[in-house]
Image (cartoon, rainbow, N blue to C red; front, side, top):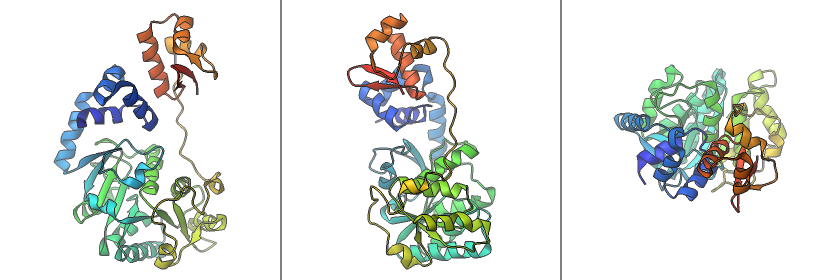
Length: 354
């Protein structure tokens, strides 16, 4: 398929994995889906600029469903439709473990993360983390001593964050590692992007090791996402009086595997993700989640369509008669509402409120 059309479709606002699949099923190709989306599709000029920018960076795009897409990540229900990648894709061929933790990590925590990552890398395990300061950076540095590492970043590949890790990002890409981003080039790493980055870190890994995490920290979002994806969860115990260890200690209390050595991890690292990990997602129900984004209230004809619908499915033809809208106009409105998560399409050409 044409990379330009696939990129535009993947970048279109409101097109997630389910909508992407429906659009391709309904229209047959990315080009036809873009034509149906009309002005809502991501602009062609923006896609061309991104492709040129990625080429200048020595980077490439990985599309969900393509052979070079990371297989573990593809198992997620909300796997990114496209990833920008810079570095060596051979990193996907190794077993992978995420090492994550506090940004304001202690010196002892950073040292432990670096040594643990080094010890795993010696055993041909790829270390995954989020390139944040603190534990993440230490894990990447330790992995580079003896093996390889994958960094998932929140902003565009051309916007290293934090700036102090820009050199580390370059090292990872140049020394056999890999840097991945779901965001277009030029995207600033805003707070809402980090939980989405965290799901990539969890999704790329067979297991996640938490080192120093405060209660209600972003690191615990990664832990929750890992458990939901059936990945093994490990936590390194810390001093009970250190607030940076309360979250990681609580994970152990809830059932995460205690990790003090490389062997503690390798002994319980699966060859493939389980449908449900030992550390069940239900045990994490009250841990931090990605902040919900309020959907804009529809107006005009879209609001009229919603007023005529309920949770009981209705045939599209009947809905058109109620709303007195032409078939093409109603189809466009339903697509817009489906992309906004307000309406779902059901078998038999029926629709219902979500």
